[in-house]
Image (tube, rainbow over all chains, first blue to last red; front, side, top):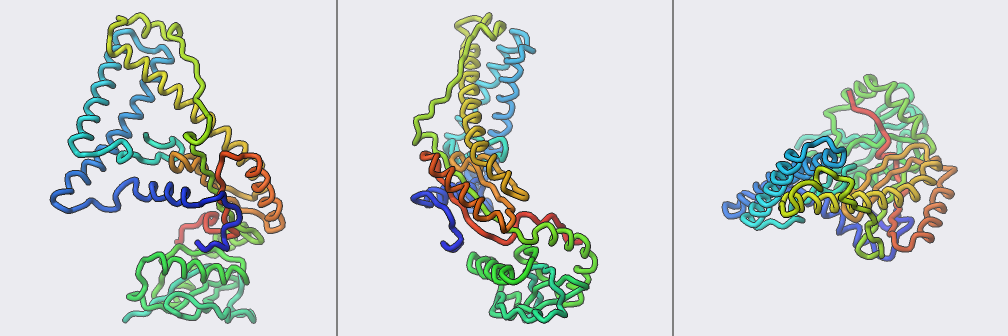
Length: 114
Length: 248
């Protein structure tokens, strides 16, 4: 985009460029086929999707607790499930050398995943 | 090397009019010419497809060609990479899609597109999520054993979600304050919220040409009032985001 098309900008537009790069790099265009990195590339893709589902489950669970539609036993089981799921995700991230930011995915109107 | 017809835009000008030689260069240093049907035309040029690689330079050239056409004609930009084998195929497309093309051309006539991106970095402001959490409101959760790690985990999660809700409410308020006056000045608009954690609004507006100045001045005014928010307004652009048409 040429500068002549910029009508209003705050001091630096570098910050915009950096942020937009994040969208571009949210998911790899292609899986890295390097034998040593292929696992990490696949893991990033799969774990991003699992994290999306986990977050959606968590949101739904919070709504159920707030709406008082669960029994005490169900609430406790839900807490156990969510906690174990989060711990397992942390383990997997560590195994594949991934950080929270690596699994970030823009969800449009839902906002950012993490 | 096979030649193809690269289509840049659909225009509401008749190929038989006196303007039929636009004197505009297209991709691969080719001259743009018109292929017409009734009162609309396609702006095309002959390109060696082998030379057209997908790159930012080619994309900029394509955009420049459309910009040059847009100065002279009301148009619908075609998707980057639209090619046909020959002029006969192009006339067929114009015939099959004639009424949709005409409708869209009427919609975008005398209007320009503007892109607005808003960046707000919560960490660089004094914003603190505000929420109240009262365990008494969650009777069943409260009744669980106080030493249960799952009970405490869920309490933390509820607080975290309330904090996130407060953050989203703040984002919605900022977007509303910016977007609300702009949508009144726009003919059409498209809004995406939270494109990234910091780019909280990515919007495109189709603005009547006689409203352009007021639209720009309104954004300048909002920018002056909102010191902790960064603005990026670009335009005027051809109506890239306001053509509702799948080619048949």
